[in-house]
Image (tube, rainbow, N blue to C red; front, side, top):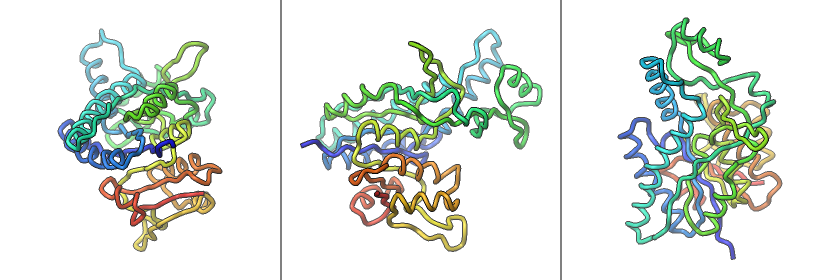
Length: 310
């Protein structure tokens, strides 16, 4: 009998922002992840990378500014760097926690690429602001390179598209590791967006919503459950009012209706709910749990968090 398979999507709270914060945060995160492994789940982990990739992008841009002889670093390369250094801390923290519990399993980080459609509508309407604040002259230079910029407080910043994920290029490798009962960290930051050009993969100047990518990975792995860890204990209706209404459970039909009614913010809860709907599809056995990192165990036991089922 196959073990239950779970994909855990870690949010910002699970990773922190600075290097020291990340070290401490991954230790706490490792305890929550180890609980699932101790309960005999097969576990794949995805994670956010917002502050980290922003820091890398800014650092590389400043380096090129100080040393014009060096080539500017594409967004796709910055994403790859963030996957590596977040994965490094995360896999070591999980390994340590497992060994402390007497569990001997390999934890691996897979550098993950996710294909996107070059004709995705998102490329015509970029929404994700990234990188450092630029002067007007620097912004004009970016636009001459074909990049989009937007005016913000204190100057200008780059803005990129957030296309939908089509395929996870390394899905077979991730599946093979899970089948071998190993722990896998993959699709960090939504994965590195790439365009498929014949036999070649070309990095795209875009970002993929991390929760959407987590849902796609969970689908491809035929997971039983997707756990989305975020900053709230439960999904709420009327969230930004004085009387928010927490939800213990939702059906897919109810979730679709709430989305149409505009109940969930585009930059926070909406991508999570859309990922849940997409992952569950028409399945009567798949489920999604949305809660905080420190409430994961209670959420799995059904005493808190929001559960979504068909």
